[in-house]
Image (cartoon, rainbow, N blue to C red; front, side):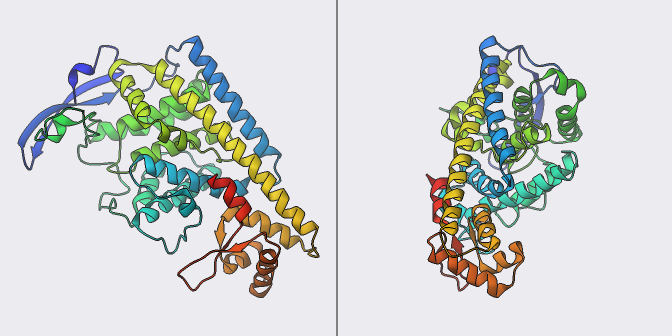
Length: 399
């Protein structure tokens, strides 16, 4: 890490660290420890506050539409799977969105798919935690990290706990090949220990502090909290994915969103270099204005994109239900199955039986009736268990 990049405006301190590299022997260097977050917003330009206002308006429009829907929760799982695919791609784990949307959670095709589906399980668990009125805490974050890496190469004996070793992030351009990793790194976050845990514990308190809630716009607060988490880099794996998840969790906790349908990572994934540069510029030069401007623009675009997808799914839902109304089917369970198909993307008859609350035989007949109407279709699979999906809803999500 280049110490010369850090100016007197950096919102933190460089601290001495030392260790032993298996190839290069003993080393000494520095790590960046961010300051505790202030309870007042950083100095931001009028232009940035306009972008923040645009983001708030886009989020309000998304939330308003969700609140008018009979059951906004049906969009939660599709949004989570889309976010899982994109946020994992940012960290180098890639699978096509079309594959993730219909992936069988019990039989993932490979480790990459398993890792992406872990994010879905993590997100679903964390949202339930929040809905139960439980606070975001270090314990919640540790549980999230354990779920995220379960059954993957990232799972270690230290999973589900704050890291106990020094890590380095990225590599600077033009560094000679044999340079020790600690000197070649683009950024070195806080060393492990009591101080790292204490600063991570401070973050959830800051997010819910009454003065912060009163003085700091929710979009600005989400940007600041995201920066702090990413800069602390508290876990040995999964920090980027958890940090981006916390953006949505934070907005949900503050009441900006009714339902966690916002998908933020596609926008950041498309601008990953700029995204990482803005985070680093806050650490090196205290450039909050450019970072918050970038972050707010991302939230606005993400909210608009998610809103559009939601409206398209509503239209697809109405088209499918119109087909039922024009058929000889009159059972309310047929309409319930349409909502179920949007919420679950790919499913078995057994899952229909469980979630809709009908017998297996009735579920089997109902699924076939909707297949005959062209509302549902079978999925090609190597497994003996039949799985189905709604092509109209699927095409909206992958478009």
